Image 1 (tube, rainbow, N blue to C red):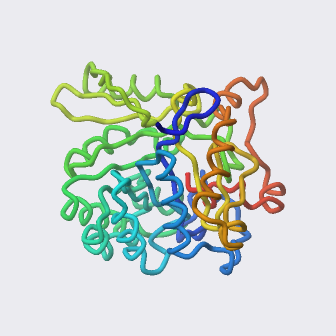
Image 2: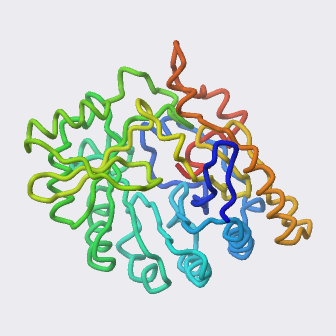
Image 3: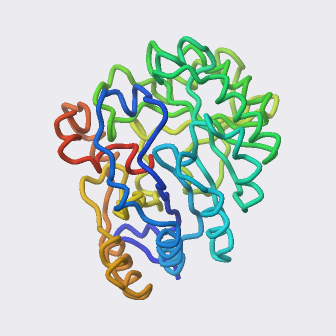
Amino acid sequence: MPTRDALGRHLGSLRLSVTDRCNIRCSYCMPEHEYAWLPRAHLLTFEEMVCLVDVFASLGVRRVRLTGGEPLLRRDLPALVRLIAARPAIGDLALTTNGLLLAAEARALRDAGLHRVTVSLDTLRRERFKTLTRFDGLDQVLAGVVAARDVFGSLKIDSVILRGVNDDELSDLVEFGRRMQAEVRFIEYMDVGGATRWSPQAVVTRREMLEAIVARYGPVEPIVEESTAPADRYRLRDGTVFGIISSTTQPFCRACDRSRLTADGLWLLCLYATDGIDLRTPLRAGATNAELAAIVERRWASRDDRGAEARLALVDRSAFASPVELRARAHLEMHKRGG
């Protein structure tokens, strides 16, 4: 039987960060000018990551998503993909990337056994991309999307929607997704990690997104399905499917079966968690898989985290952490905990 937490949520999905480095600086994730990076000696080796994947798989995890930072900055990533894909228990192995390096890596990742790719892409306009990311790399990302489509047959595109920044591109992104055989998922701006400039006024809600899409395309059909995935999915009249992740205004905490493992082995039970469980230290001290599984199982059994719901209940809701707090506690950063 799958391991369940205090609210009955089973341990089903693991987001595995392979690096905290990133090659762009998105304004909603890394808006500051300086960051503290994890010491390289603290980063888990591929063999250590696979050992921990085996531990989580023994407790019910069947889905693994590789994240960062930007995961394609981790050298020889296909080698890690090959090791995890060889695990019979892992039925879904996915990757989230900003797409800058994807064109060169897509084939090797697919050959190694990667099942799915999600590309983060918030705008199709060059100058806006440069403003959002502080990097002139839109052409590289678009090439990565094309490569993913050609190699994997389809993909997902994640777009964080910011009021007054890119909220006029919803239909453009839907049309782009249609051409690229990609399901676009629009994400409400979340007050997590490095979002030090977050404010409620900057959030474009699911309701507002749906109103804009209906105004452009006509009525949309909600897709009713049994899933722990974070996106609510909808179908246009021509069959095009898109999703909306509304964690800010309508959290999905009660169905959340995912946890996060940082690149240096800190296990986080919620995206909003302020503390984690160190798995690197006992792993490197020689703990057996059974001993590590006991640590994980015991902590998951007491899990009652509902971080997004707690944030929604705040009367005076502001950014999750200040720049000063992030410098003092680097693991609060979104690029360290894998989104």
